Amino acid sequence: MTVRVLIADDQPLVRTGLRTILDNAGGFDIVGEAADGQEALAQAGALRPDVVLMDVRMPQLDGIAATRRIRAAPGAPKVLVLTTFDLDEYVYAGLRAGASGFLLKDARAADLVSAIHAVHAGDAVVAPSATRRLIERFLDSTPEPDRARTHLLTALTEREREVLVKLARGLSNAEIAASLYLSEGTVKTYVSRILTKLGLRDRVQAVVFAYDTGLTRPGE
Image 1 (cartoon, helix red, strand yellow):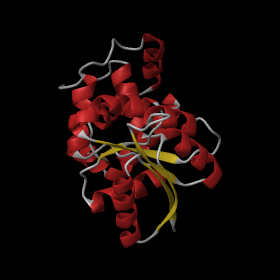
Image 2: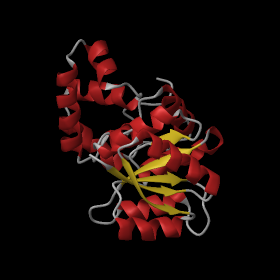
Image 3: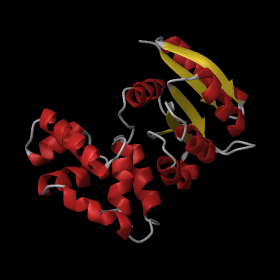
Image 4: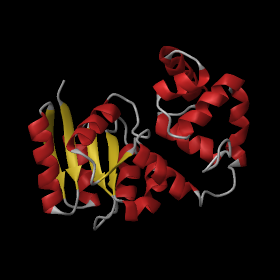
């Protein structure tokens, strides 16, 4: 199945590089390119891509605001935010805005391809070690727990809470399964139940929820 991709970055060389990687990988249809956030918003609505590769710092409308507005539309495409270590303060804001994950701009071509397929399939890019470090660095400044949402935790069983904590710390399903002596299929079932009970879209929202409610803290 071909994945329709929109590339949004204000640097022509970056857009060309991303297009080249995806063209060489095969299985992707680059439906458009945008040089700023406003253009990305317009093209997302007109071209109906499956996935938007979204830079953070762009003129007219930054990538975070563009992501929020794109994701608010019915039938919205998934958004994969592109960032660098010196831009990691934007990561949490991107997740809150509805992005399905984020990727470092110096990631390997194979990682980019895998990440796009992951978000297109409804998963989220939160497991790689670099991503884990970025989450923890940013969340050191997470505000006090959101008391308005903590009551939702009562809907979870003790085991579901355990799974959610490990998910929030960046563990993959296989890693969670190994640490809790469960099968990977069982963990997938738990994750699905957690998302349903909490009314969350994907694993990224689950990570945000766990930190927002104080269920887990950076460095724990």
